[in-house]
Structures are given as structure tokens and as C-alpha cells.
Length: 327
Image 1 (cartoon, rainbow, N blue to C red):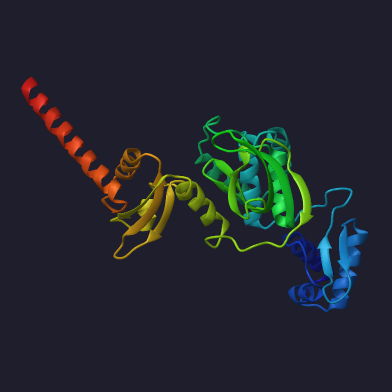
Image 2 (image 1 turned 30 degrees about the vertical axis):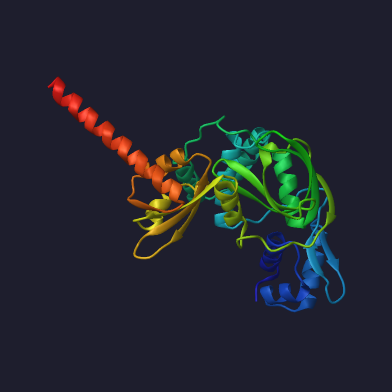
């Protein structure tokens, strides 16, 4: 059994890691009785931590909102992730967060052990940022949408789609996903009775939070897969399946998640499900990977690859012939 002071720190860490704990769950995690849990909760309250409790069969504990921010307990991997994220935010990855991120980073790094500071510096040194290529995302909006997803609260906001058509959306947010350099909200659109993927930089108003909802199963199993499917397949006129004669890991290094969905195939091959509005550009992108491939569908893409191959062959023969004439 842990000593009282160590147990309090462990209890605080548990309360910070999850929104709600039953007394029995905390007692099991701490290897004490529920009576000891109640005493430890009272000790945390006396130290200023706003631990809220509810009685009854469905009762338990949660760390509420207080008048001041209590100290946070971070594991090493969590501290590394926070420090790395603060460095990215300080560089302008999310608009409106730069100065606050710098202040928070200064406070955090003076407390980090040397090994974690070195790890963060090593990770960040390998990242090159090119600012201004994508529209910035408002930090406050991002925080509101993430909190509404966590707390299962409906949200209303104004939105402009890729054709710049404006609309007001009433959604049940299920999560925020970061892919490439963009942020996406996965939500059930109440008016359209279906799931949708929203680019957060296209939200044109503040997010107005409403009543709670019961979450629904995510299409394709998880948020990341659903977003990848939405932005690489569903949005395009042409759908394609391509077989690459290389392992998935090798192909994934050449094809980002925003391009399509990769899956394992037989004998060290992998399959790409992707889409595009222009078959010629789609054929060019597939060929530019530099890996042997076979187009499975659609037939029109097979024809486009054949036509491209013939054009390249003619260009090669013409270039070779001109080179020989000059010699």
C-alpha cells in the first residue's frame, strides 16, 4: 500500500486522467478501501482541489472547475507531448496561441528533467515548418469544439463549404482530428441526419454549445479512419483502387493519409483506395510514387495510365532521337 502522500498524488493523477471515477474504481486502483478514498478526497479538497462527488449507485468523483488552476501531474510521455505541442503552437500552428504557448513552455521546460528536454529538442529539430500554406485555426474555437466533443454537448456554428456556400450547422461533435496541416471536426449533422467532416478553418462564427447528446457509433470504426475516408474518397467524382507491389510501410512513406486509405494485401503488397476529380492528375500522382503498381479500378483510370504511358514513351523516343541528332 502506498504512503498517504504518495497515494494523494496517485489519486490526483487518476482524477486528472479521466472525467469520472466511481469510488470502487478508485479504491481498486489505489489498493485501499472506499472509506480511505473518501478521506483522501477530503484531503485534496482541503488543499484547494475542487473534487466533486455524487452519492448513490451511479455516484463517484470528478475533478471540477475551481477558482484557480491546480498543479497538473504528467507522465514522461505526456510531458514530452505537451512540450512538443507548445513549441509547435508558439511557432504559429494555431492562431492566437503563440504568446501564451511561449509563456507556458518557459514554465514547463524549467521543471523538465534533462532527459526529457533533450528528447523534445531532438524531436523538434527534425521538424521543419513552412508557415502560411494553410489557413490558421482559431485556438479558442478549437478548444470549444474539443471540449464539446469530450462532454458530449451539441454545437451550433456557421460554416462555409469548399464552394463558399454559407450555412448554419447543428451538430453532435464526436471528436477533433488533425491530419496533415489541417484540423477536422467529426460530427453528426442533426439536420442532415448523417455524419459529416468539417474543416475547422471554414467555421465562420463562434461555436455555440447546447444540450447534451448520446454519442453514436463512428462510421468506419474510428475518427481518424473516417476523416481519411471523407477527405480522400467521398469528396471526389472518381474512386480508384490501386495495388502497389511493395509493403504497406514502404508505400505509406510516399503517400500521406490525406491522399487515401492504405491496407495490407497478399504477398507483401498493399492496396490504396483513393479518389480524384481529374483522372489524368490521379494517374500522375500514383505513378509519381516511384513504386510498381497495378490499377484495379475504374477502367477509365486504366485507360488514362495507358495513354500516359504512350505519351511518355513518345516523349522519351523523341528526346533520345533529338539527342542523337545533336551528337
